Length: 362
Image 1: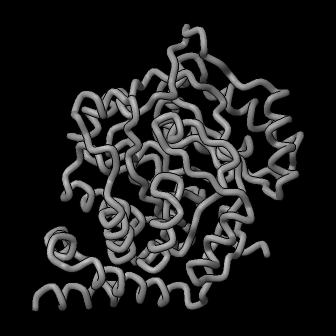
Image 2: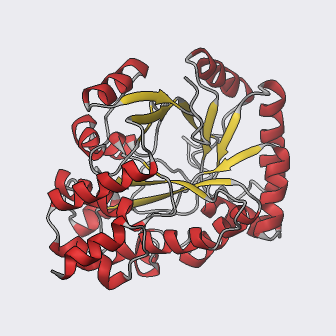
């Protein structure tokens, strides 16, 4: 059977073509995809370990000019609820993070029209001076594109200055679906597909740790989901040999409550559990050059997340001490430290706390 040969190629770590990937996605049963992806997972991660981490998501501002149709969080610059996080607020939030046993700050905001490179340099240096052990997992490609434009810098110049100021790793934020057809509808002002990929390529050349994400379950086609994953794979293949490039891939589901996107297109309330599990399995099979696949319990919940650990995922993400964007669109799943460890154990694995570099801390 043709799909058997394709599945064996994926298990052997061979890059699949778009047509081959679509055949698997469309024609292979969920149980077969899960079994193959789980086999590949154990080829890469031989121990029965699932990793997790403690970090805090702090938004430096809620001002953004992108106007993404899936986002309820952003405000215009003159809105009465617009803010920029203050020094005292950072101090309080970071001290709470440290007290909880974490040291990574997921620092994100948006495309603020008045904040150039100097703002971020000053902020990063200040945070690192006060908290020398803090790890800044900050911004994302769309913000780098925006900062570069308003500061009249290249992507490389922007990244070099931010790294010098204290940036430790670059999240895969703002990827959504790497298709310009989709992006023109979702967020026409935000970085296009080529810009997102170009920023990540520059980051890889600078040996900056990065992650990749995908938000699916809205207006994208099934083929566009696969194309997104293959673009991530192909960019990872171009990284310098001494660079880690994308250290993980995190697919998560569109949360549509009260969003412009959901109302305009009358989208389903959520992606089905099976659909998410299949996407996790496909991610593991199509990304032999990215070590870690994360299950997004934040958007699909504990039970589905646990199943994903048997479908190719080896990481359960963060307890997320603070999260505003996804929760403002309907996600209400929560974990504390004991909760995430218990969930991993219930699924049959040994939980191990990690850092952003996927180094075990226990």
